[in-house]
Amino acid sequence: MMGLYIPLSSAQSKADHLEAVDKFLSTYVSQGRIDYASIKNDPSQLQSLTDQIAQLDFAALGDDERLAFLINSYNLFVIAGVVERYPVESPLDINNFFDRKVYQLGNDKVSLNQIEKQHILARYGDARVHFALVCGALGCPVIRDDAYRPDRVDAQLDEQTSQALSDDDFIRLQDGVLYISQIFEWYIKDFGGNKSSALDYIRSHTQRSIPADVKVKFYEYDWTLNDL
Image (cartoon, rainbow, N blue to C red; front, side):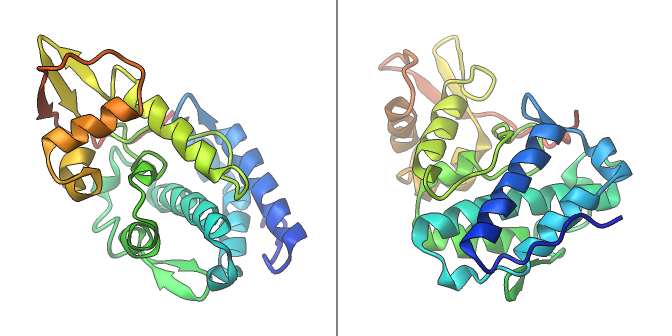
């Protein structure tokens, strides 16, 4: 059975969409993990949300509104892509998951990588989005259980970034070495271009104590599905 269909053509319908995203995430996300099995059993809420995203004119949105809807859309599309092929052990088990599968984003058919790199990073140049876009793997920062909202997206990005960089599982200090996610390696230009600048970025977004002479190494990304 399909969920309630709300074309995103008015302020009220966009507000209703965000409320529906909140309800969906609060239902199926727990401690950063996603209950894919339950969504697979009843995908009507998710289908309704992706149908609504297809109706939105992203070009007509202001910067904060556009960013919030893009982040939400990316995360919902990742869930939809996994659910379509579930059960899987990793998003990488789905052939060309980030490049071949396309989704309807307003008037455009786009892949996950196109949303991330062309629609978000190229436009905003904000490294904090790396802690908000969740790729469906345990190596990602944890997914929120609420929607990104235009009037709060800046604060939410700060929260996500601080949470990730204060997480001992995500940023690991051991024996004088700071082991950091390969996200910093893959997107090093977004963090200043080298390990030293990445370390400065981490220090600026966390209250944790990091020794001045610490060495920085990248640890291997965990592509295991972030399945509840």
